[in-house]
Length: 255
Picture 1 (cartoon, helix red, strand yellow):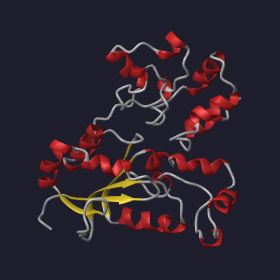
Picture 2: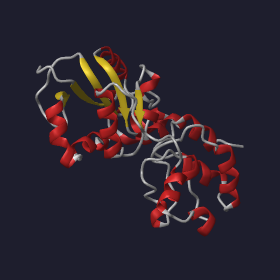
Picture 3: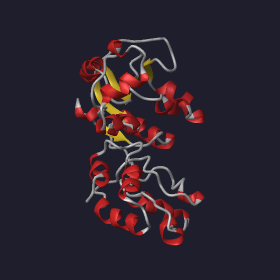
């Protein structure tokens, strides 16, 4: 090792999109690579250096007994551990298994389900080990990722907003799709970070960045119903990328 801070990137159950965001930094990638040692990043290089690591970025949820053990080893070898993306922070789209019979899914999908070793649930990394910071998104925003990596390597708290997507709509001058068009939107309860991507195209927010800090889902659900959405519609709205996030779980079963 060169004496520079070491970075490791780890994958669990996920699509790899959040890891690829690191490679999508483009102009910033080479300066970043010069400032740190990329000790373990299987998506980008076969070169591997042993820990301990100054910073570990973890993508993906825990869905197998083996991964439940592996995350403990990674946590022990990491000075700081940051989870990146909806899978790592809330269980991801695969957390839909938490509301159904995973054995039935396995039987239907696989020709030889007896060879499949899986857990009944998909859970975030924080359910298994202490996490120093959670970076939301499906996928994460590359500018926010750069801010998080830079912050941890310099020993400061990342400057990531905890406000809602509605604040981004206001900054961009985007007309509220619920007020103007009656379009269901999770923007009022979803953490900012996407720059109001969907509302800027007259589409409701899908909640990709998960629940904001102290989201008032109890006030949003009746509004969605007044827009003509059934209980099943509301449940589907909240059971997407961040179905396993506690505030969205509660909203999906709201009476």
